[in-house]
Amino acid sequence: MTTTELLSQLKALGNEKMHKHQVKSGAEPDRLFGVKTGDIRTLAKKIKTNHQLGLELWKTRNYDARLLAILIMKPAELSAEELSDMAADLGLDWVADWFNSYLLKESPHKEQLREIWMNSDNPWQARCGWSLTASKIAKGAEGLDLKKILDRIETEMPEAAPAVQWTMNFALAYCGIHHPEFRKRALEIGEKLGIYRDYPVSKGCTSPFAPIWINEIVSRQGK
Image (cartoon, rainbow, N blue to C red; front, side, top):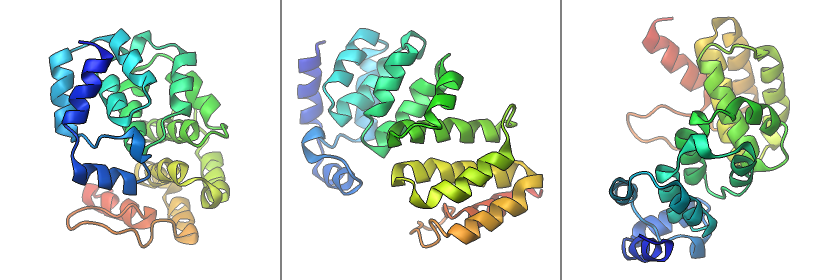
């Protein structure tokens, strides 16, 4: 199956409602067909792993094609330079989240890139850097200075790009949830900044506002 054939299939699977939703979320309209997640996953299962085809799909810059590409690539075969270039041009939160979950977190270069991207001026690289840092905080925070990280969040988060704020907020919440000695500080920062305080939340879901998020998870865990 060729890149051209797959783009035709993706276009045929496009959903108007999904397209409108993604455009509202920040997607460039001409880079999107609006394919449902389930349809992309079904197509990926048919293709299975095809790293070269994944690279070709990525180069199209079409968001749906990139989501498909992420599912069929081999993370271990992506160099640090390739990952860095890809991260710099993610362009959409949905693509960024899949990139982090399916490629970056499985890469042998993730720690090297995390340290670089934590200081990147590119918002998508910075988003990835903070996402990796948040994951590390949740898994013990080995080698991390949580005091310095919280200081950075307090200082930088108010002016950060929305794409970066989202994963910085995960780092803030995880400091409070997984590290009791930093819980009070994380709650104070969350209250002070007020970011996501009024975020609309569906029934049964947890607010991303850090103080609510921290307290709810800690309460559930009985910590």
